[in-house]
Image (cartoon, rainbow, N blue to C red; front, side, top):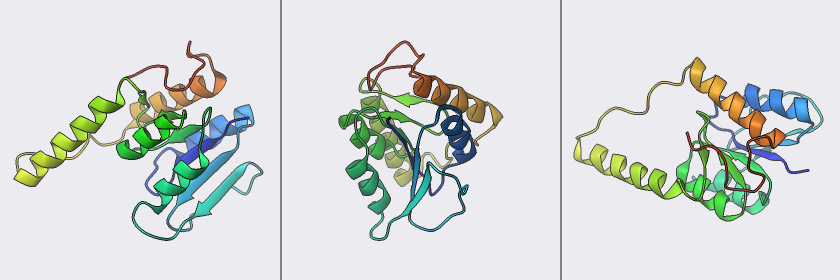
Length: 158
């Protein structure tokens, strides 16, 4: 059975991931650059990677594959995982797809350029209960396979 890989360092939805994983018996691998407390349960593993800034991302790309679900807020990592055939879910419940990742990368680059110019100084909207609920519903649907699309890279693009 495919698993769930979590880019865990700044992930605010770990509890939701555990909840869905328990419900469906899916293994979860959290990947981080430092130790963190996780539930002491079969099927939930923490991998601590050392190295450069992208070491956790690189580990996920080396181990995830078709059918797996990757949870991340990192758009370049999302793009890399989509190329592997993985499903990729953002922290606010947006599923990245082959159709949407180009726009997401372009928006990220534009916002970075605007910040560098001092034009855009604000960050993303704060994470709230609706984001958590949307994430939980979307992950549940992906893991259940009830989203109307059984293949990688398909589904809701919120």
